Length: 466
Image 1 (cartoon, rainbow, N blue to C red):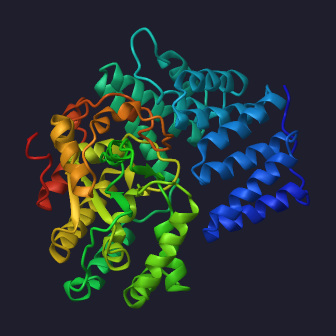
Image 2: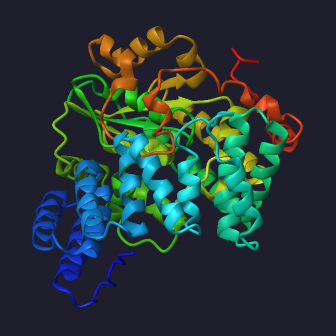
């Protein structure tokens, strides 16, 4: 097996990549791209460098470039599982699912303890009686000696495939075990996020936001936001199928712009305080600078970062021309969809029914606050309505953003643009309603969640489903 050499800390390419990463953090994307292209040309025979470069391209949202660098690494080190895994991951984003599956198979054959490869492979297609990995997953779980990483990754994969096969009680048992193992490894306290959302609502009150006004000028950034697994990627793909729209995917740029404009803050409470009194026009300028660096070429540019729902007030103050699209989903389906998703980064509230309930309640209260203090400012889309009446709801959405209707938006599954979210596979398929009401299959297991939401006065389902 060809193994990648460990990088030498003093190597020229490593120093160059350190500089490129600093440029990425500063939002100087044009210079970062130039630097990455230069380094890639200089290290064409160094697979470790090529994989590091690929990672940087991925952070820039340049998935085709990331694929190119990964393929070069695999060509040099064809037997190395890290190179094969990296290439498979880029191919999931670009939609090359069959090749990605073959590569994950190869990784698992070479390195059976690469648990992430097992988890990722099970997301690529719906399991069927003829094509599934149940026997292998159960065998791997039995032989992993309680390795917590294995228990999490294999458990989520097993739960997913069992659900596809209609074995719902077994599926939830596997999911509950894996989620508990994942939660046990976190130091997260949901109370801190609940308090942060309460502080945001108190700080961004009607008085502060009363002078904001939406402008309809174009081009404009379009924020697609909401909880993860609520349908934000579906809405993003519908809009970005329009010839005048380009999606940049999930960006850290607005949060980074807030921190850069606010200056140093010791904690979230201080950052909220600073964000109220900051120069909001300067915040808008900084964010537009970062967007321009992505060189998208679209008249409308989508920033599809779900947790930007925390910044709706700041978006309204800093970017009066922005469109804010809030995607909603029934509480129980939405929470269950998060529970059964193994997120690599972020969303630590998604591994416990208690945490999910507390976070969902706080989210509902914050969004109700935004509606009250910014009436009519958000374009709100209900996932259940969208999948039930795709044509009418898609047209309403497109026209509300300020675009002329184009029927190509109904064929979002043909959109070839890369997508790097947990919904990467689903949004390459025609729209369906299979997951609407799915939580009812687990009514008994999810009862504590349902009871907590009901006590808070939150409807369990969208009214059209209930």
